Amino acid sequence: MPARRPPRAPAWPSIAAYRHGVICACDVPTLDSLVRLLEAVDAVDGVVGYKLGSLLTLRHGLVEVVRAVRKMTAKPLLYDHQKAGLDIPSMAAEYVGACRDAGVEALILFPLGGPTAVDAFVGETLRAGLRPVVGGALPLDDYTTRGGGYVSPAALERITTRALALGARDFIVPATVPPAVRAMARRLAGRRDARLFLPGIGALGGEIGAAFRAAGNVAAYAIIGRAIYSDRRPGDAARRFADEALSLAHGARMRRVP
Image (cartoon, rainbow, N blue to C red; front, side):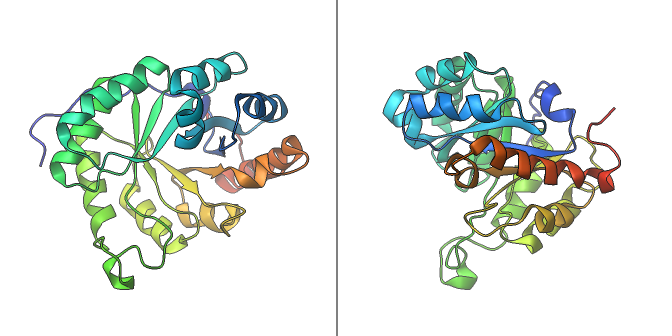
């Protein structure tokens, strides 16, 4: 197990206020389309943050994308480098430092390279005051060795165990695979500070209801992109998803956590 535990990342007040919510994935092609998307969805109750992807940032640069977002909202930004963390450990500090300097709050990491990759990328993220959102599973039939792929079916469980020991509390699992969501929820049971982020809702076939029920009592947030930004009325689409997410929070007793 890791010998030294990095400091815990700072709290996310705007996300922690909700047990369930929506993260809008901003996989749009231009800064103008990004601004229009934020104008449409940012005021929606239950939209608690945004995910930035690599295509937008490769075109415009992470610093410029964050600058454009910060003119519109102060909600947390999760950066997904499709999928960072699978690299030699010596790259971790520079990668994390560049993301921190750009102004994001969280990094989606898939440290499939082994224990040293987990220690380096998760550890450096925590030391930088950012939140690692840790994963290791993709909704592909041939992803693991069981389906003819190259990744062990035990990879996500092993990554999760090590990341938890380091201090990570945020994890990402495909919403399209409810059994995987249930397995992760069991692993995180009893940790009130743990969170699940669930991509694949909408266009990829995942459903908020099924995914959140699989998450049980663990705080869960749907990551939704195409089903919002491709809609003719993205604000209305975001509201439908957010209303469904909020209605499922603790049996619809409370939207927010006291």
